[in-house]
Image (cartoon, rainbow, N blue to C red; front, top):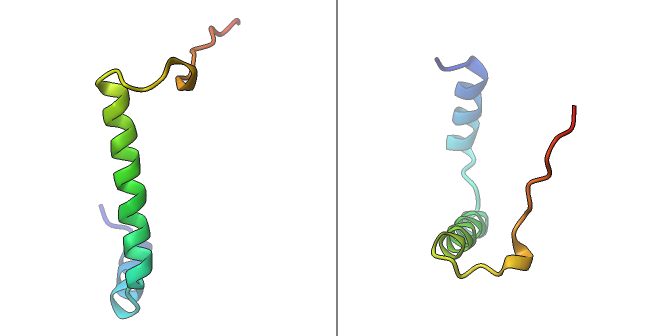
Length: 58
């Protein structure tokens, strides 16, 4: 369900769209994230850069 705040934000965004530089920045960040995910998925991400799970002790 849409919250009225979302509608107001969409209205403001439609009246004042982001600059072309901001749009390129967002798409650049998304592309970098997808490249990192792809490298990790196919096994090309180095072991030293992977996070290790730490077991929880209760």
